[in-house]
Length: 200
Length: 200
DNA sequence: GACATAATAGGAACACGTTCCACTTCGTCC
DNA sequence: GGACGAAGTGGAACGTGTTCCTATTATGTC
Image 1 (cartoon, rainbow over the protein chains, first blue to last red):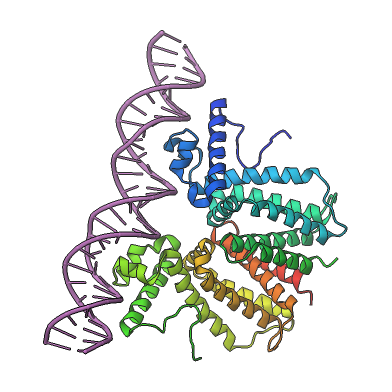
Image 2: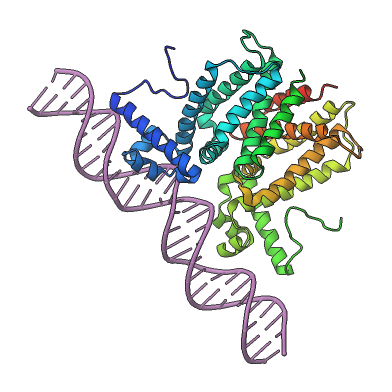
């Protein structure tokens, strides 16, 4: 891995800058974890990261950028952990459901964090397209890997299927985050979708 | 139609109240149509509707409620228009794609309105669950009707399929509204999803 | 018609995202 | 070491969603 990170250019700048950036992202993560989207207040992040408000805005041009960056970083970590181990299951749909359940369980264990993440992604505009695209690719590759472990080439339909599953996942997440459906409903709906798409 | 409206209880109150409510929703609609989510400012809505700010908040407890109500109303109108005519197409997937394209085209013809709508729905929390659920049911019934015109009973899979298509539609809409995908990509992605789900 | 109650007007006040400014510190080049 | 530009500090200020308060106007009851 030569160019480590695709989400953000964090290999630029001095050590002090890298440190400030890390402090900011850490503070964001903690506040999001404790109190969700509303608790990630720019003044609070600046305070917690021991940085001036103007500096915070120099590093991240908006609250949305900040959240998408912080939580994209977490997603990347989670993805690389998952990538280490082979995915259990005998059929594509079993493996996809395994991945979805595992990921969803992880998110639902941190409701506030998940709420902050989802709101940020939903409110993002074109200026964060890159960051969001990176997360989307990560998700797609997670799902296609579950569908065809070790496959070197994928059909268009594989990718399209993965995207549809990703869409369902996102909608389910939004419904759950906004309190419009329970965790169990979320899981059942995703299983249904996978079953309809991947008829083994 | 005896109880005309399911989204909001607008058959309560005096004529003056009904009139105020209508003025508020009309003002909201116009502002959203002209300038999108950001243009729907509570003070602007109050001014345009010739109502005090406090009165506006008496009728709608938040900007999100206001938008969801105003735009849910429009969605209902659009749905009832569609319901009048039979849906063309020889197969379920053709008919579903017809409905999706028609609806999507309608939305994309009013980008600002669509942006306001989508943002409001994405930012909604449990307190607007009822309104959102109503729109969701409308969408599901639109889609199942396209799948099986005139059918009296639906299988669980029919409903699940409609919900998945609705999820894809929502995600595509969000991506389009936030400038992360073009109208053409949105359409292609939806067609793909329908093709994968409804293999005639 | 007089009164009690609710609804509305008008607007101040507050919270938080964002911008801006004056000043200080840091890093680099001579 | 000194000079200069970039980066950081601290905080005021602005916009908009939301809340709150007081005076005024409708509305319904006797």
